[in-house]
Image (cartoon, helix red, strand yellow):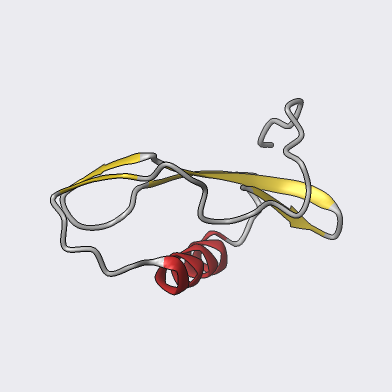
Length: 79
């Protein structure tokens, strides 16, 4: 999932497709001046809204949780 602020990409969030134990795993890459706490809060809120409260030890997510509104810019690099 691409993260934008004022039409400028400032980050990238990738949810792991395979999870071991309880919870989902995310990789978050952000610009150095991004508000990390705020973005983590947003991601946790979205994850909680879309979570199925699974009690499984091993989970495979075959689909994406969040539909992107804007396509990821493959040339983007964090500053």
